[in-house]
Image (cartoon, helix red, strand yellow):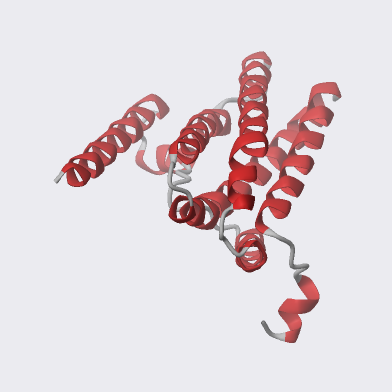
Amino acid sequence: MNAKTAQTLDVVGATDLLREDHRKIKELFREFESAGYERKKALAAAIMREIEVHTVIEEELFYPAARRALEDDELIVESEEAHHVAKVLLAELKVLPMGRRFVAKFQLMINNVRQHIREEESALFPKVERSDIDLMELGEEMGRLKMKTLQSGAVSRGMILVDEVSHKTGVGLGALLIVGVVAGVAAALLKSSSELR
């Protein structure tokens, strides 16, 4: 690590970094729930960004490392599915105008993410912490990816920006979500059929 990176990156363990993200996201959720209408608008954008960045580091680095270290990957599969649900809700929220439906859907997303956080922190993280993963090295790598993602505005390969695609192609949100679900099912079927061979 070079001196510039060392100055801007506090190295913490992987699960500590994720817990800190969770704490920040939960605090933003509480602010959103108690905020007035105009403040909700600004908070929603910040929350969606935090979730997107957090998803990148989990899906790109943490889950693959956990999958390699743990014999049973059921908790990882559940976490990936929770991310999928959050991504679908985020995609819908990005094209939904602020109003009662937006706030109701956003609250649904909050409830789902809170449940996901509880499950990760109570079940997955303790298993990972007991594994042979070098949490400091993984945490350093995750910290670098987080900084890079925040600085570049990049999102994970799996984080589809449906509103941009919808706008550029003229294809409606519903059709894009169906295509995304079908593509996800097809990928899962291909993966499972190759594992059976």
